[in-house]
Length: 159
Image (tube, rainbow, N blue to C red; front, side, top):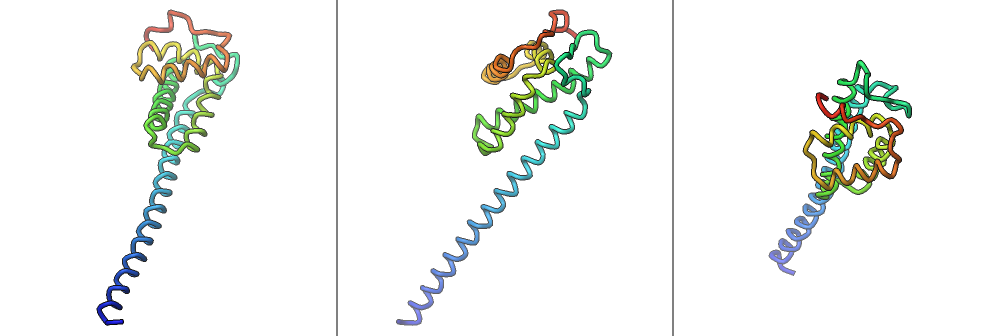
């Protein structure tokens, strides 16, 4: 074997090793990016959840007449905005299915809460969301059962 052939073989092996190392580094960076993304959304969710009064998650919650109505509406507007972003990321295949599954379970659980249902009845009338997202939320609310304390028409204004 000539020195030229040995040099070519060494170059080929070194190139292959370098390519494998680059692929491994890219996989690790991808994992880190997914973890950071998930962590950012979890942080945002926790910030929103901390702004919702605890009794708002109870089954006897009624939005109308509450002195903290504006606070509840602001927090749940942010919640629906976050849910929309998560739904959009999933729809455009920008997040992993296992992450979407966790988020979707949380959205489903939220849609069973009277506060979420009552605020959604207002928010969907004065906020622009993709029609498919509206259908998604409406189907979750329908599957979780509508609240026994529905929002009244007078709540549609001034939220």
